[in-house]
Image (cartoon, rainbow, N blue to C red; front, side, top):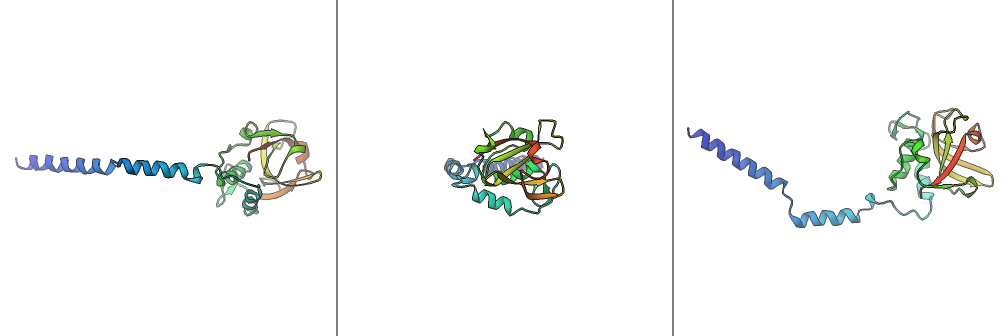
Length: 178
């Protein structure tokens, strides 16, 4: 009979201890809130020039292609690579090439700048649906180079020219994220 009150007392202390561990003092809540507002990870970093973004992207040259992946350790598909690069600088960007078509600020190819996102059709150039994406790496006269993760001959993160292969026929548009 003495066991039941002891059991209830023990249960009461356990509940009381658990509640005290989940109750956060107001001062602590305010401090965490203030730090969260100031934390640059939650906000896009202001990029004075896209060079930092492109240097980061270039550091991943040679990472293999992998369907439906956005991890440098496993490999990248095209949109996974672009997503990973921009996310590293705090930008929330789409994860699929189709979603990139409706994000950012659309631009004409003539108005493109380095750091802009370039969109292409998939492997079927007759279908005008976005299926490939990259980041404009350099512009010299009429030659536009872009960094992307290719499933083609390069098989991974590489830099290609808009003039090579069938990219010119597959070109859809440019969007600015920065």
